[in-house]
Amino acid sequence: MEHIVLRHRDIPDLHKLDVYIKNGGFEAFKKVVTTMKPEEVIKVVQDSGLRGRGGAGFPTGTKWSFLTKNRPTYYVVCNSDESEPGTFKDREIMEKNPFQLLEGIMIAAYAAKANVAYNYLRGEFWQVAKFQDECIAELRAQGFLGKNLFGTNYSLDVFTHLGAGAYICGEESALLESLEGKLGQPRLKPPFPADKGLYEMPTVVNNTETLTNVPMIITKGAEWYKSIGVPNSAGTKVMCVSGHVNKPGNYEFAFGLTLRQLIYDHCGGVPSGKKVKAVMLSGASSVVLSGSDDILDMALDYDSVAKKGSALGSASIIVMDETVDMSWVLLKTCRFFKHESCGKCTPCREGTYWMLNIMERVGKNQVTKADIDLLNNVASQIQGKCLCPLGEFAVTPMLSGLKIFRADFDSHATDAKAAAKPAPAKAAPKKEAVAG
Amino acid sequence: MLAEKYRSQIESTLAKYPADQKRSAVMQLLYIAQSEYGYVTKEAMQEVADILEIEPTQVASIVGFYSLYYDHKAGEHHIQVCTDLPCALRGADKFAEDLCAKFGVKLGDTTKDGKFTIEGVMCLAACDKAPMFQVQNKEGIKYYENQTVESAAKVMEELGKK
Image (cartoon, rainbow over all chains, first blue to last red; front, side, top):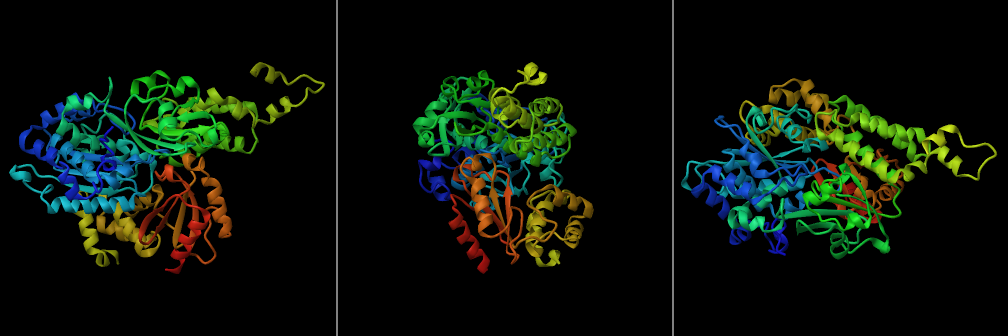
C-alpha cells in the first residue's frame, strides 16, 4: 500500500521543497485558495471521514465547522506536543515529510479563515522546530506564505512555538494557555476553543498526523479517502509500535489490520519467541489489555477496539512479553502521571501522588493486600473528578491493570507471601479469607 | 543584558505574536536567557519580565512549571536519559544505571568536574530507538538514539572537550 502520511517512505527526499512541489506539493493549497470557499473545504474534510489522530478521534471537519461565526480573528494551531509515552509519529512526519504537514496546516487555516497559524512543538523537539522554521522561511520566499496569496486577498503566515517540557500541554486548552505564555493548565470547558481559543478567538487545534492527511484528501477527494480503511475509521493510521517486538517503529496501515498481523507480520514478532502478555494501545494512558487470542485478533480501528473496552487513541502500541511484571509497568505509568499532573485539580494532583506512593512500596515489597485494595480506592476517587483527561489517563491503566493482573501486584504483598508458605498451624488471618 | 545582546532574536520572536500579546514570547526568551547564563537566574527573570512588560513572578512561575528550565546551576550538559515505560522495556533503566556508574554519580547528580548532570526523564518520543538520551546545553537540545554505555560515554567525552 502507498503511504499517505509517511509518503516520504515512497518518495526519496520529500523533505526538500522542490521534490515536494514536483510531486504535486501545494497544488491542494492553491486549489482551495483560488477556487474554493472555506465552507467547501470543510465539507470535503467532513465527507472524507477523517478523525483526529491525536487520540480523541473526533471528526476533523466537524470540529472545523464548530467555529463561531463573524469574529474578527481566527487561529489554527497544530498540536505537535507529542508526549504520550509510546508515541513517536509526529516527529517522523516533521523530520521527513514537513511540507505535507505545513500544507495541511495552511489548508486548515484557509478553511478556518485564519491568517495566522502556529505549530506548537514540545520543547525537546528543538532541532525539529529549527528545521520547521527553515521550511517555513522557504515557503515565504517562494510565495506560498505571505500577503495576497496567488493574487487573491487571502494572506497567511505560519509560526512555530516551542514548548518546554510538559505533557499536559498536549491537552488543547492547556496548549493554548502555554502558547499565551502562561502555565500549561487546562481551561474549564465550555467555552471550547472553537468559540474562545487562542487570545479568546475561535481556534482550531488539530494533531500533526491529522493535518498531514488533509492535502491528499483535497487532491484526491473525500470518496477516495473514505474508500481506504473500514466504515467509521476512514483512511490510514500511523501505528507507533514499541516495547517487546523485534522491529519497533512507525507503521502506516489502513484501519482494520489486526493486532496479530501488526506484531507478527510487520514488526517481526516478539524477541526470543516469547508470548505477548499485555498490550497498551494508546500509550501509557491506555487500558491494559491481555495478550489473549481474542485481543490479538482484534482489528485496529476505532469501533473494534472500543468493543474490547479500550480505545485506539493515537495508536501508540506498547507490547509487553510474558516476563514483564505488570506491577512494575503500573509503577512506571504512575510515576509519569504524578510527574506530569499540572496541579490544578486536587483529585489528580493528590491522587497521582498517593497512587505512586503505594506503587513505590509495591516495588519494594512493602505492601499488604489491603494496600493494593487501597490503590483501587484512590484510583476510583480520581475518576470523573478532573477538568481534563490527565486524571482519567492516570487511572485507566491502574484500574484495568489491577483487574487483569492482580496476581502481579499481590506477589509483592507481605501477607500474600506469608499465605503462600506451607500452611502454619494456625489458620490464615480472617481478612484473607474474606478477601479471597 | 539580553535586550541588547539578543535584540534581533528577541524582535523576531515577538513578531510571531500579536503586538498586544507579548507574553507569548516568554518561553522562547527564557531559552535565550538560559543559553546566556547557563540557568535562569533571578536577574534574568527580571530582564525577561521587563522586555515583555509582565511581572517577574509570572516569569518565575513559567520557570517552575516547565521541566526544561532550570533556576539553579547544574552541569554544563544535561544528559537526560528517557527511563519511561517503552524505553525501560528495552533496557533504559539498566542503561541509565550503568552510565551513572561509569561516571561515578547517582541519577540526578552532577559529575565532580561540573560538566555533566545525568538525569532520568519522562518520555522523549523516541521509544523505538531506546536506549536514548538527549543532551541539553547552551546550544539547545540534541537527541542521541540507539545508544550503548560505550557510545554514550564517547558522546560525553566529545562534549567534555568543548
